[in-house]
View 1: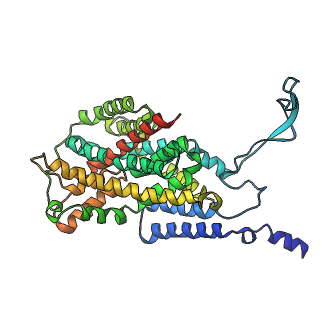
View 2: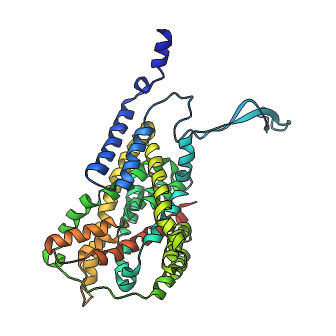
View 3: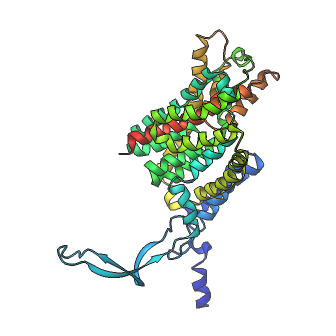
Length: 408
């Protein structure tokens, strides 16, 4: 019975805390949204299961979680390391025998999140599957993608006002760009301790685009505005499509050098696609590579949400700020489209402005859905893709600016 009792004390049932139970329920909700509602299943399913895995409790001396990354520990190992003499620094260093304690497998997977390796690889795949033709055919729609970044900087100011440090506020603000990989990348650089809540908030709101955006779009537009039909985009030449990633990268990276990694991978992937001579590489980037990285990133982010680190007042504030950021970004895009219409002879359907957030392609699909509720024969998807892909570039530039300014 003593052995049996000792065993019971090692089980997850015995070690379970209310916080762990709450997080496991949240993980199940994410999985349900992915399967039942089809909300971003490629993201929510791995994140949801990762949340469950990360909140199964275990003994403190077992290396199983994402934060058990090993290190050098004093032991009877064979490696000798000299440490300064704490009692008298002028005396010779004291030799100590140490050995390397291996971390958990989850910690090694999380390495790609913690050190910003996975997000650029995601951008490589996005670039290899993105067609910038609609944006090039109507360049003024790029302004809508830029306008949506207002959500980033307004949330940055709001986070500062609440009491977050400038670096923390910058990492939180990027949620307004509705770009999960960018949010993870910047959080890893500026506020690693907030990476879990920021990543979950960013991906949650990306998945809830069909729920969050339509009410805002309808509130800020009239029926006549929603009925506006836009002319078909012009045909873009192959030369334009090849030159664009090269020229755009140089311009954007010179403006915001902090965005070099993300934009470099994005435009490199797009160049592989458009060049026509590296189709095998482009196909790998937009299929196998991005799928593998998405699985690892989503699962690792979910597993990082241990209850004792996730269920905090700061996490709740981050979720509140994230929702506000997403709403502000959507509203800014719509309102700026209406502002542009004051000066344009060929009007823009203001709904297209909502696609300025970089939730590709879901926000563009929402624009199409809302537009066809008023006019089933009004096809806005191709037009909406222009600010949508511009928003991807805009969010990366915004992240580069924040990183450059706040890194010190």
